Length: 285
Image (cartoon, rainbow, N blue to C red; front, side, top):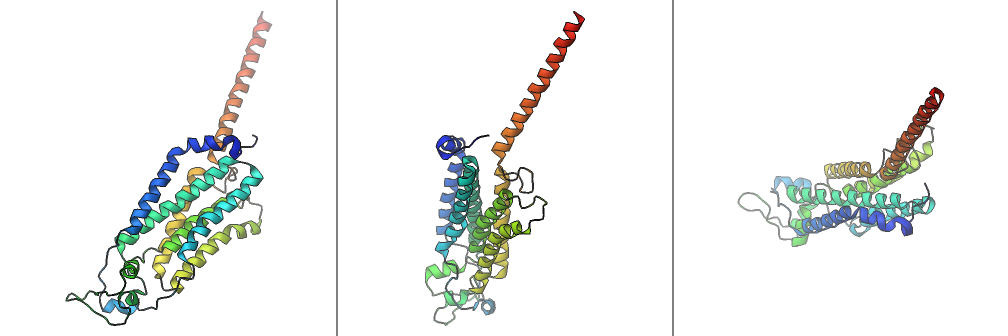
């Protein structure tokens, strides 16, 4: 089929998917809005504080590093495959699918965070940094900590670190399983190790969120499930299933191959039928 490089086909593939990139920009705008608005301040009574007195700790995985390993690391892997295959369609679709996976997950995560307003395990010290508790007549906590700490303290469910991790690294894992044909039924367990490694990274990030007392285990479980489901759907929009015979290709090329093969078969059948018709006609004459 020849090569499809960025120089020869890059402009065409970007133009063909202009609407998709505009939708991505819209998702970025929605995510910014969701990030700055205040979450629902759920009722937190004195008896609930017993489970929310874990100490405030620094994040083992800093927030700034999340886009590094969920977006830029997978893109680096995609570029490595591009240098080998010289297929700009595969590169474009992999980046597009990854960004959709991460941004859709981010929007859903922050929308749920703001709607649920679940307090974090360290909420007590965010609310009462000096340890002096204060409650109103209805028994709800009257916080006197920093507003930014209190606002973030109501964003426990689901875990954003975990959902982003499984959205980006989960997409990378599925992508690798297709490219290296991990399910080719030839018994190469080493391929599965490569496929599982990004998922292991994402799992460790989720565990760190519980260890840092930034999330309850239910927050991490829900975030991981959300990210992995979105990653699977986004991958399925652009690539055949990784266990498919054409799992290391993309829908654009496989569909072209099918159409080419089908049209070739029709032309061959037509030629054969036409040849037989004229041959029989000559015999009759």
